Image (cartoon, rainbow, N blue to C red; front, side, top):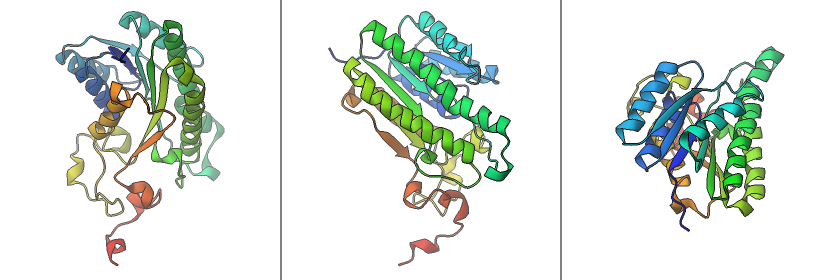
Length: 265
């Protein structure tokens, strides 16, 4: 049977990458479960865009620091959707505190949001797919800092390293069930998380990024949509950087290189 996904859940889809992903999956023919933590109005706006594509949308509040209770939110959305073909773990946060200044509470909040809560939600999604006996797609939005560190982001980097490793183990274990598991690792993307609200990334100058600009959330969503599609049936255990070439320059390049002198031979 050819994998033909009709249902998806995208966590943290009230804005930014999550919203763009929900809309892209709806355009690909999927009904979408949408989650939000603090921005209910944003989730409603995402739902309206999904419905504009002729698909169903369901919204739910999801706090990934609510452990292990956040899994019940995923189960409830599955019940409303009727099935689950694609699960995108996008919910996340950052703190930006240097290691010596990082308090334990902030450390745990970042790890719970980005890693521990992701584990619970991904496990609930995977168990649903295995119980149904059908193929599935599990996708995590990580970060270029899944593989490269960044000064001042010890908790964030640790959580993203952990999530990337978790996804690789899941790929090994779930392949026999016909479930692919992949990560998408964005660089700097013009979203509310990077304090870039409704800005055109093509108008921003980033000399330290080979493509010279931040990314658009829809450019991340396009890669997620590919991994969720039948065309990606033999792709698993991979992490896809979508970063304008930033990783070729080093993890501080986007913010710390201020001229294009490096391009001179």
